Image 1 (cartoon, rainbow, N blue to C red):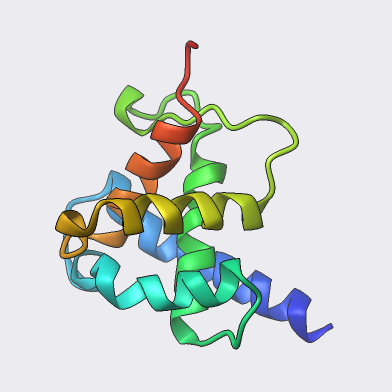
Image 2: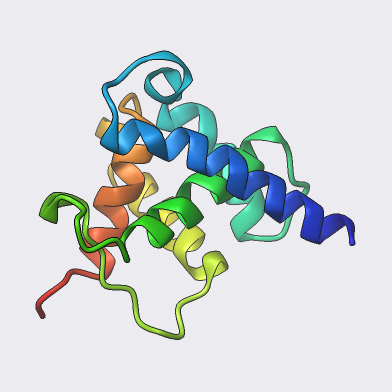
Length: 125
């Protein structure tokens, strides 16, 4: 039961963060840097001790996936994940992509989550 609540709570947090993808940049969404969230992503992706940033990571990644189904979304934000993709898989993809691009770790986490998932699951292939 606790795990279900945590993922639901993380999703709500992610929705709030993802609004930064479609709304003007301000507040919390713009202040979260990938370097801050990466440890939480690692903890979630590899089932270690979850922390506050694990929830932020899961929420943002799951929201990016959900938002990718919105047809009116800007083409630069579209992601075509396979039908059997899981949140855990998406978090692991984002984590690995960010680790492979350390020069970008001072950028906004939600922007890099989109870049990572678009790189792994581009549309029109």
